[in-house]
Length: 156
View 1 (cartoon, rainbow, N blue to C red):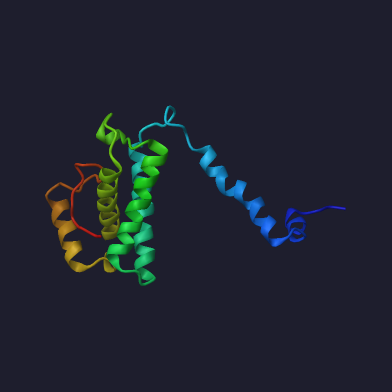
View 2 (view 1 turned 180 degrees about the horizontal axis):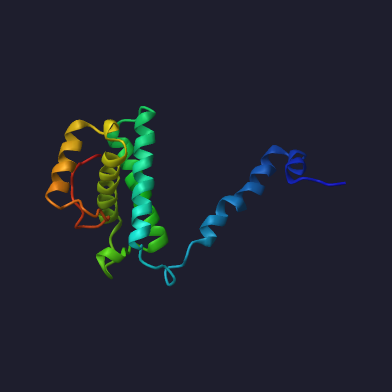
Protein backbone atom coordinates (compact mmCIF):
# COMPACT_ATOMS: atom_id res chain seq x y z
CA UNK A 1 0.00 0.00 0.00
CA UNK A 2 1.39 3.35 -1.07
CA UNK A 3 0.83 6.31 1.24
CA UNK A 4 1.13 9.83 -0.13
CA UNK A 5 2.24 12.69 2.05
CA UNK A 6 -0.93 14.66 1.32
CA UNK A 7 -3.18 11.84 2.47
CA UNK A 8 -1.07 11.29 5.57
CA UNK A 9 -1.34 14.97 6.48
CA UNK A 10 -5.13 14.89 6.19
CA UNK A 11 -5.29 12.60 9.21
CA UNK A 12 -3.34 14.99 11.42
CA UNK A 13 -5.17 17.59 13.48
CA UNK A 14 -5.33 20.98 11.73
CA UNK A 15 -2.96 22.69 14.21
CA UNK A 16 -0.27 20.03 13.72
CA UNK A 17 -0.35 20.40 9.93
CA UNK A 18 1.00 23.91 10.30
CA UNK A 19 3.86 22.53 12.41
CA UNK A 20 4.79 20.29 9.48
CA UNK A 21 4.81 23.29 7.15
CA UNK A 22 7.09 25.48 9.29
CA UNK A 23 10.33 23.62 8.42
CA UNK A 24 9.41 23.83 4.75
CA UNK A 25 8.96 27.59 5.03
CA UNK A 26 12.28 27.99 6.83
CA UNK A 27 14.24 25.85 4.35
CA UNK A 28 14.98 28.73 1.93
CA UNK A 29 16.48 30.73 4.82
CA UNK A 30 18.82 27.86 5.63
CA UNK A 31 20.01 27.84 2.03
CA UNK A 32 21.01 31.52 2.05
CA UNK A 33 24.76 32.12 2.15
CA UNK A 34 26.30 33.26 5.40
CA UNK A 35 27.88 36.70 5.58
CA UNK A 36 31.34 35.19 5.06
CA UNK A 37 30.19 33.40 1.88
CA UNK A 38 28.02 36.17 0.43
CA UNK A 39 29.29 37.54 -2.86
CA UNK A 40 28.41 40.97 -4.19
CA UNK A 41 25.48 41.01 -6.60
CA UNK A 42 26.74 40.70 -10.16
CA UNK A 43 25.50 42.85 -13.02
CA UNK A 44 23.42 39.89 -14.26
CA UNK A 45 21.86 39.42 -10.81
CA UNK A 46 21.09 43.13 -10.60
CA UNK A 47 19.38 42.99 -13.98
CA UNK A 48 17.33 40.01 -12.79
CA UNK A 49 16.33 41.69 -9.51
CA UNK A 50 15.44 44.91 -11.34
CA UNK A 51 13.36 42.99 -13.87
CA UNK A 52 11.51 41.13 -11.11
CA UNK A 53 10.83 44.42 -9.30
CA UNK A 54 9.59 46.08 -12.49
CA UNK A 55 7.32 43.13 -13.32
CA UNK A 56 5.88 43.34 -9.81
CA UNK A 57 5.16 47.04 -10.29
CA UNK A 58 3.40 46.29 -13.59
CA UNK A 59 1.34 43.46 -12.07
CA UNK A 60 0.39 45.53 -9.01
CA UNK A 61 -0.61 48.51 -11.14
CA UNK A 62 -2.73 46.30 -13.41
CA UNK A 63 -4.45 45.05 -10.25
CA UNK A 64 -5.28 48.61 -9.20
CA UNK A 65 -2.56 49.22 -6.61
CA UNK A 66 -1.51 52.88 -6.45
CA UNK A 67 1.83 53.60 -8.10
CA UNK A 68 3.73 54.79 -5.02
CA UNK A 69 2.73 51.72 -3.04
CA UNK A 70 3.56 49.31 -5.90
CA UNK A 71 7.00 50.87 -6.37
CA UNK A 72 7.73 50.94 -2.64
CA UNK A 73 6.93 47.23 -2.29
CA UNK A 74 9.00 46.28 -5.35
CA UNK A 75 11.91 48.41 -4.15
CA UNK A 76 11.77 46.95 -0.66
CA UNK A 77 11.79 43.44 -2.12
CA UNK A 78 14.93 44.16 -4.15
CA UNK A 79 16.62 45.88 -1.20
CA UNK A 80 15.87 42.99 1.16
CA UNK A 81 17.26 40.45 -1.33
CA UNK A 82 20.43 42.53 -1.75
CA UNK A 83 20.79 42.85 2.02
CA UNK A 84 19.98 39.22 2.81
CA UNK A 85 21.73 37.42 -0.02
CA UNK A 86 24.57 39.80 -0.85
CA UNK A 87 25.02 41.58 2.53
CA UNK A 88 24.44 44.93 0.83
CA UNK A 89 27.22 44.60 -1.73
CA UNK A 90 26.92 45.19 -5.47
CA UNK A 91 29.82 44.58 -7.86
CA UNK A 92 29.05 47.71 -9.89
CA UNK A 93 29.44 49.85 -6.77
CA UNK A 94 32.74 48.29 -5.65
CA UNK A 95 33.68 46.92 -2.22
CA UNK A 96 31.40 49.34 -0.40
CA UNK A 97 28.66 47.79 1.73
CA UNK A 98 25.51 49.81 1.12
CA UNK A 99 23.13 50.63 3.93
CA UNK A 100 19.58 49.34 3.77
CA UNK A 101 18.42 52.92 3.13
CA UNK A 102 20.84 53.26 0.17
CA UNK A 103 19.62 49.91 -1.14
CA UNK A 104 15.99 50.98 -0.78
CA UNK A 105 16.53 54.28 -2.57
CA UNK A 106 18.40 52.69 -5.46
CA UNK A 107 16.02 49.74 -5.67
CA UNK A 108 12.97 51.98 -5.89
CA UNK A 109 14.68 53.91 -8.67
CA UNK A 110 15.53 50.69 -10.50
CA UNK A 111 11.97 49.41 -10.18
CA UNK A 112 10.61 52.71 -11.54
CA UNK A 113 13.02 52.71 -14.49
CA UNK A 114 12.20 49.07 -15.23
CA UNK A 115 8.45 49.73 -15.04
CA UNK A 116 8.80 52.61 -17.50
CA UNK A 117 10.49 50.18 -19.89
CA UNK A 118 8.06 47.27 -19.36
CA UNK A 119 4.68 48.90 -18.80
CA UNK A 120 4.84 52.65 -19.41
CA UNK A 121 1.03 52.92 -19.49
CA UNK A 122 0.98 51.75 -15.85
CA UNK A 123 3.35 54.55 -14.78
CA UNK A 124 2.11 58.13 -14.18
CA UNK A 125 2.98 60.33 -17.20
CA UNK A 126 5.05 62.80 -15.15
CA UNK A 127 7.21 59.94 -13.85
CA UNK A 128 7.68 58.59 -17.38
CA UNK A 129 8.85 62.04 -18.50
CA UNK A 130 11.34 62.34 -15.63
CA UNK A 131 12.74 58.87 -16.26
CA UNK A 132 13.06 59.49 -19.99
CA UNK A 133 14.83 62.81 -19.31
CA UNK A 134 17.24 61.12 -16.88
CA UNK A 135 17.99 58.38 -19.42
CA UNK A 136 18.62 60.96 -22.16
CA UNK A 137 21.11 62.67 -19.86
CA UNK A 138 22.87 59.33 -19.42
CA UNK A 139 22.00 59.05 -15.73
CA UNK A 140 19.82 55.97 -16.13
CA UNK A 141 21.79 53.92 -18.65
CA UNK A 142 22.60 51.17 -16.17
CA UNK A 143 20.43 51.41 -13.08
CA UNK A 144 21.99 49.79 -10.05
CA UNK A 145 20.74 50.30 -6.52
CA UNK A 146 23.11 52.44 -4.55
CA UNK A 147 23.84 56.03 -3.72
CA UNK A 148 24.72 56.92 -7.33
CA UNK A 149 21.41 55.71 -8.79
CA UNK A 150 19.27 58.35 -10.52
CA UNK A 151 16.25 59.70 -8.70
CA UNK A 152 13.43 59.90 -11.24
CA UNK A 153 10.65 59.46 -8.70
CA UNK A 154 10.07 59.87 -5.02
CA UNK A 155 7.44 57.26 -4.20
CA UNK A 156 6.56 56.92 -0.52
